[in-house]
Amino acid sequence: MQNERPLIGIDFGTATTLVSQRLPGSPPENVPIGRGTAWMPSVVAVSTDGDLLFGEGAEAVAGASALRSVKQCITFDTSPDALHVAGTGRSMRFTADFLIGQMLKHVALRAKASGAEMDGAVFRLACPAIWDGPRRRRLAGLARAAGIPVSVADIVDEPIAAGLAWSEGLFWDLGEDRPDGTTLVFDFGGGTLDIAVVEVTESLQDGAPELTVLSARGVAKAGDTLDLRIAKDLEQDLGTVGVDVDRMPDPSTVRALLVAAARRLKVLLSDTRYGEQAVPLGGGFTDLPLLTYSRHRLEKAFRPQLDEALEHVRAALCEARLRRRKTPDIESLARMGLRDLAPDVRHVLLAGGMSQVPLVRQAFEDAFPHAEVGFDRALATPEQSVVTGLVVRNYHRLNLPRPGFDLLLQWEDPDGSRHGELLYPAFEPLYSWDQVMRRERHLAHRWNGIPGVKRVTKARLRAESVDGEPMDFSVDGNVLPYLPIELYPRTSFSFELRISGEMVVRDATPRPLTFRVERWPVLRAGEQGAISLTQLRTGGNVPQPRSFTDVHSHPWE
Image (cartoon, rainbow, N blue to C red; front, side, top):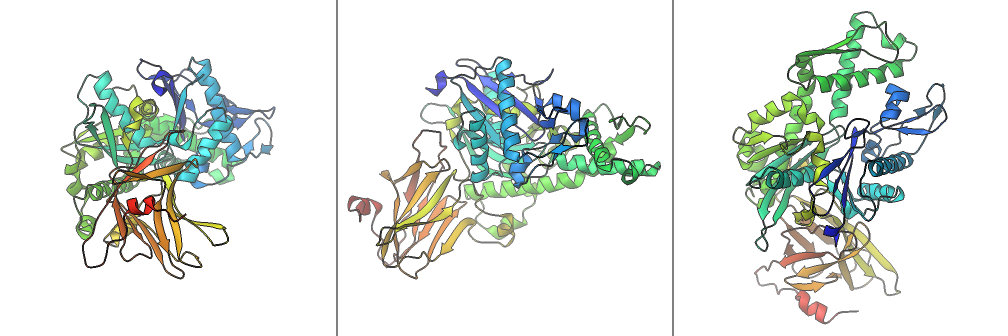
């Protein structure tokens, strides 16, 4: 039983990494893995001996030349920069997978040394909401190679984890009622902005909380983007006093130091007591003036990025309305501004380090005047929101906004050769925002094509977890290993997965097959999931296709 095993959560973030644990019968607790802090900087460098260093040790040896944000290599599918060997002019190259794997192994060692009950524990990781199935599978594989036994099912969207932590913290830690109504989770971290619109309800069966995710969106533009913007301002400031970075002996190192200084200034100016701060450039450049930055300049640099973030919030609220089927008129929805959608929200939860910039809270209080805006009061800092949510035990009572599994069309030729098409890849967003702007009537993920069958063929629509495990369908209470599909030669086949929860299949039969799903199941490693569907009957003179019960009772094979 999982409830009898320790839970370990690892928030491998772009800027910092945190670990939490929950022992049986105990509340969540943070496992301090930093040198004097709960978190470890997600930084890697190479020592003079060629050994890899992580966290504070990497910062101490390599300073600004240390590699940061290696997790972004998964987000953008890129390779990391070469690592400079400390104290030498040499550099070494490593693959992103190797560095991430070694960092996760180092995190696990630190957690165990700090008292985490690692043996026999259930592990969970977090990832940005924008990650698709292959990215999640890649992280899970690297974690397993590092000795952290996880599957894709053990990887939770970061804003969803923050929402889980908040809901549980209100009830268990603060003794308050669980949040009533719709909650907007705004997780502004170092590498990604993640947004979720969630509702918490009580199960009619046992009263336990169920969290329904109406929307989960993300964009790979967050704290790192602001750091670069501030660093650009600081370089211009140096230019006004006659310091041309391009004419210095090592411009790339100086610019890396400017980014590090920008990061420090951003954190210092998040304290509302100070309107201006100054920091040295560092790196031995003692003859240069202090780098000074004001909150006014910070807010001016940040405002365009925050405005773009609020547009993503608007898109998430539009998606939530579509899932509730509250606004079927797409044209009206496309014209709605944030103030028109704001009454849908009762609570705004701010999470992530970037959310501590005072302008963020001010912007949300202005945009959502009737909502309660704030951080998770049960936690010491907003950075702990995600890692605490990873050790919530009622994680299985979670309804996702999109399928976390692949949907495939499969068939066999007369000679026995097998063929297939991937109709929907796991975790793929069901629509793009430009589809809303084009006022498409049905926002959906679509697949259209002509399968290469040579004769009338009985095909199968199957579901498969990202880890390769087959899943069943439950159609009107009848459990089926697949949905039967009929294909004709040179005849089109189409598949739609609508945001409203409808799945529409058009095969060679006279009328489309339409189903509705109320929830997408959360899959766990080693568990058999079933997708519960309701077939929607349509009227008309055209005969209805055979029922799935009839077909399954008289299989073709």
